[in-house]
Image (cartoon, rainbow, N blue to C red):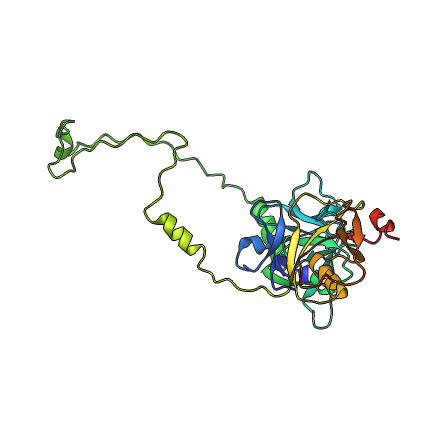
Length: 334
């Protein structure tokens, strides 16, 4: 808490050299490298009667809150949002835990329920996301360097006396509102103002002649493309030379407790390893999950089958589903 004692406004820099950033939609929170943006600044508010506990407010006046909404289905991390609750509760309260050694200016921000503010990395949707949980791996992702932007003025008797004097200031007794002075008599208009305006049909000789404009197009009308535009687009579309992609393409979904997955396109990456163990470690890094099982779907009945031996030959693309070892569907693999 020492780093926040005299801080009025701070920036929080993550392990990935990105700053805690309040999104323009005034709801979401992410990471951004733009340190000069006011969205990367957070107002520090100590919680009354709770030493060592604080709240953080974004430029939009909303509080940094640890919600109960899961970030992804089947993942332990939960969303961190900007909120303005009707009643300030423990969801907007954070406890700074000071780090020592090489991280003298770093803290871990803990919720009242033991989770930590975490800066994520990897492929979308993990990239630049911010969640709160208790990480088993990547412990450095919950460290935040505190950069103080504004410092509170030092307390003292002079400041207290000046505040009391400012509160007791009243207008002097002899003060009277200014009386309305009589309107001055109008001054005579100049001679040029008395000249009559030119007739409406008068037009300077050097003005452009009037030309009729075509009527506006009907609703839904799409004009023809500019000359050569279609040829330009078709040429630029294939300007990048084709090349062979090394490794195999991995498409994966994260299954729920019963092994069901959503209808979205899922996630994918290129894998250059040769063993199932290497693939498992890569998937843990991509998803942030622990204790997962790699499965594929049976082409006969569509049921999940755990992969336990080796990868398919010839770098064939794989479509897999990850499930937790503690899930219901995993118990059917025994």
